[in-house]
Image (cartoon, rainbow, N blue to C red; front, side, top):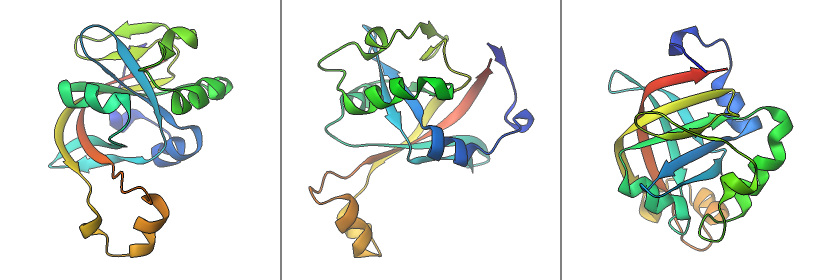
Length: 165
């Protein structure tokens, strides 16, 4: 893995997130947990390069995200789509998803990530906020995505390093 600058990436990052998904990974000092995400954004906010990710309250990863200051967002090769599917459908409370999928955990000085990632963002949390039903301007969006009222928590993280294979 080599460090690269955001300006040097030659790819459509929103399309990559939507079509290939990403592994959001956070740790608690004892272990780490990857969670598949496809909702989010990459851009600039507060004059900083940032990613925005969303995590539902019942997800194991939410507790890890809340407890720690750093997280990673990794894009795996397309041939590992089955890994992405497992990490999005199973809970880290019940299994070590990284071990189950044969992923190799690497540790940046700040956040865990996986050696299999083709592109990895190491991020420092800047902001977090729970979404609420009162803020939806279009009630159809809430009805479709939150029938159980289990609103996501939004996390904005500064991209402090980008690692590319």
